[in-house]
Length: 260
Image 1 (cartoon, helix red, strand yellow):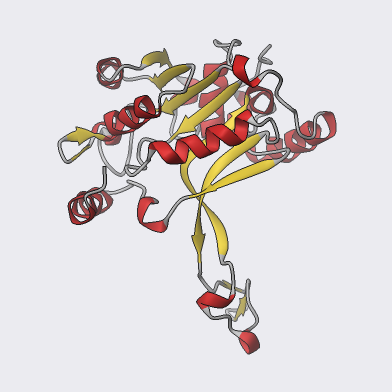
Image 2 (cartoon, helix red, strand yellow; image 1 turned 135 degrees about the vertical axis):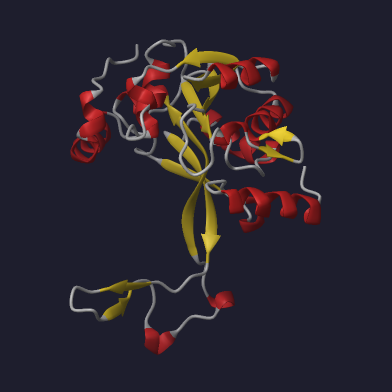
């Protein structure tokens, strides 16, 4: 049963998060899912009407197809989710979602503000759908999502070894931190032993494409916790659409590389 939650936590989120993670790890550790064949794994796209960088961003088009529809096409191509949902507060987005074969969850006003973190939108959905065991939160502003990426995450969750699985990209960046006195210091390398790209594994960076998490983890206000798994996404597929430039770059990349 999905635990009720308070939208007050939207404003106190940073303070709540550490406590929720501790409580979850103490109570559960890794929650092994029972009966993989009976799991209800729901795909969920959060697509509110308000967007700042690009007006109606979720309905922006690449190669004549909206970002929302592109993601739903991949989700249906994968074809193994128990249900496919779009959570929105917009009638235009709801219409596009229905046209593309998704069910619509109407988001509460509290979960659709500029300040509400994604987990609040996911909890809002789960509070109405206690039948869901695992939520696959998919970002439609990652235009190069592929069915094979979803398949790897889905398989890892079905194994019951993970509480969450999310997408990452491997980066080979030498990072520095600026100090209060204006000086800088290295974070992830020793300047006396600068690594060559071929000599290290790089770092895993979230790319936001998707987050699979158990409903139990979500009740604690978390998309990541317990035992975490990852899916490595090639850098060329990890673009995110946040600005008009990103949209144009993705369009050019699509034509240059013939991405599907």
